[in-house]
Image 1 (cartoon, rainbow, N blue to C red):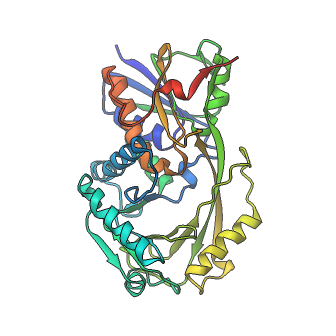
Image 2: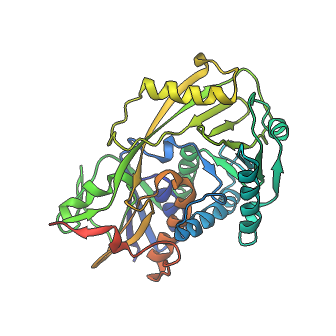
Length: 368
């Protein structure tokens, strides 16, 4: 008899989990999604965690594993170059000593992360050669294994792949009862395992069960620009010092962003002030940009915890309900590995996650 696995949320975690579970013929997989404010659909898409200065080693191990998983998933599902492009990343530093320290860090971390590929220290002129759009380049460190991903297309393709196997998709809001009942517009639905991959919406979803999740929403905005010139497919992503990230996509599309706004709650309104700020940041890198090249402003809601670390797994005293949240601005990097680990747990009942996160009780507490 097939087991019923139900996933709430079709962002990066939900989509990857569904992708892996759909390959098991003994499971019947259903996914529900409202699709509003999803961080995956509105993200910059940089996959390059290795030069982060974050001290949380559990986060780094998770991010490193997630980055390494992308080429495998992309190859297995035959996704095109417009979805995932391993064109490298450049991280810039103006101070020569800071640049050398960054280069030394890259060489050290490559010993345990061969997927980083080639490491090069570049002059400002060499950076401009790699990214011809720049009019004010700085010296930087190039990591050939860095990549950019269109999160929306990536998740969509995984769900289409899963639908050809054993995934059923539904749109619309869901809520939980006080005992974890799954309540939909079509009434209560049964499940053997329920996976809540709803990002910043986990806290209100769990409240009926008298569980408080340590999750807060963070608003993120970015701009997409269509430029008149075209460039080669292998132009790297730029992570500049002191400015927003600068991501050339598919020959003539440029993304600048994203913001980290902690006081806007679940607001999804575009801010003209933020749009101006993002454009000004891009203009410092490419003085030839014009505002009429902006084609859209994307807005999403990330989930953050007090210690800025993600968490995932079964909720205490209820192994049939799994959660994942707190991915923050690195969700597209850590999300794939979280999805794979959740899928493995559903199928085996076993896990060894201590290297990736603190105990889940750190982030889930009984309501007063």
